Image 1 (tube, rainbow, N blue to C red):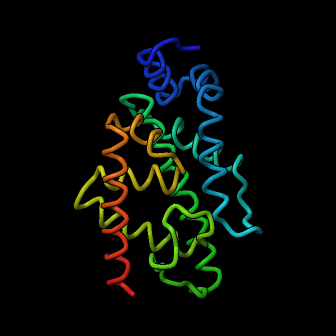
Image 2: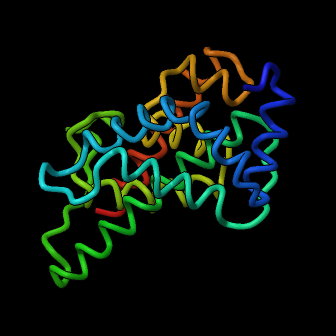
Length: 190
């Protein structure tokens, strides 16, 4: 088990380069955090969703360590990549479901009645948020990271601050600004 941030990053690098031993050593170190993030994401899903939190973690982990050599700068970078991977997996599932329904009855997300960090959002609304986050990322990358960590990974302000290397106050300010921007962006689309 790594005893420093540098050792952890080396283990990440070895795992992403395809070292099966490193991948096996890394999984127990990150599993609980990934499982908690997946459970928060899945809490927003419909009850009959075919993907379970454990499967979401495993699929995301395989994508992270099996996609060829990716150099992660640190633990925060790895968890950001994991949250992004889980988000993409859920969106892929939603898109497949939408295609099966031939468009389904997708609704536009209205922030005046829904808290962005809420657990009750259907996947169709998460897709609307995802598109808005992509637009936000073009304007301000850190705000988009804050939204992904808070909304998709379900992290607190403090956890997000630690991962991004900023203060809790900065994350609170960014979260407020990002929510306002997303509210305006999504309201303009409806």
